[in-house]
Image 1 (cartoon, rainbow, N blue to C red):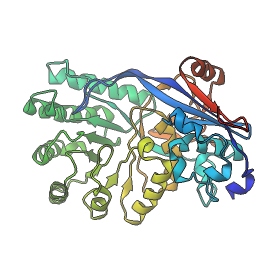
Image 2: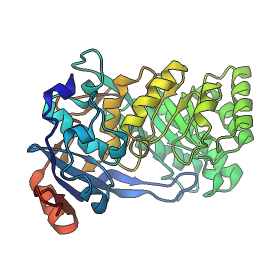
Image 3: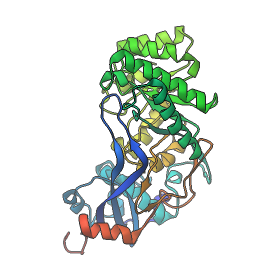
Image 4: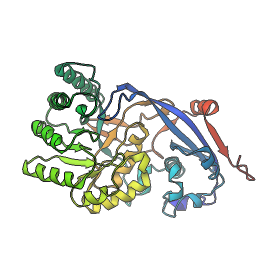
Length: 386
């Protein structure tokens, strides 16, 4: 048992926070409801020290809240099964990384009944945004997005998600729909028949637009449509019935943002094929619980991950714990100060390193320099939190 290896009265000695920077290989454009996302992404990284061992991970815990955690013991923070207690989910990723490093186990092995030494998980490139809005010609737009898809292929990707819904805000409705369709077809053309292609409308379609786009791209063999419109049981029921009548084997998935509170129930009722709560905002442990619930209901798991590549790695360790896990949404970027080279993308799958914690290495000198310049820390001095 994981917790039997721990000194349960070991105390949290120090918590540190610094803002690292992720840099994409190219700027990301808009989507159906937002403008340009840009090239640089801030990354909140917390480092925690317990019993002289450090772990680190994404967390937006405040300094004031962190002050309440220093001095707490391992038994305060973790259950007897080795899970982080709900009161401390705000710092669950650093705690899980610490637990893995202390026990010399990868995070994914902490919660599995059987031993898994090596595995890989399907992933998809999520970088095909609205980078074409400056172009008048649909042909030029298609060529640009095709080129971006082929850049992803060179990085080992085989599966891609395309942002659609240009007519919701950025283009005239009919013209935007026409370009969406042309780009979907163009990406399928350059990727060939074996790649999985998903589309994401970010609620930029309505029911009728959704039907039109899926009809016009039937030969593209799409895997799923994501957030076609804001979740509505009547629309979803009609869409699912229509897909069946049209013999279109396309999944309908949703849940990444401000999702309706009934979305899981609707999925269990057959109105959605997969749930997509964000891995960082929803959290690792809550996903463990929800994934088990969805497995029992034959609903797939496809967590959202964008705007912070730490979720790439967290999802890799969640995946083997959920039978219905579909893909890692891969938001690729270089995180300055973090070495993620142990994760290798090949033929559309990511291999997971069999190394302690989340398998990432932090440049301690670089992190400490950031900490001294723009970060904060709290520590335990056995008498008071300082």
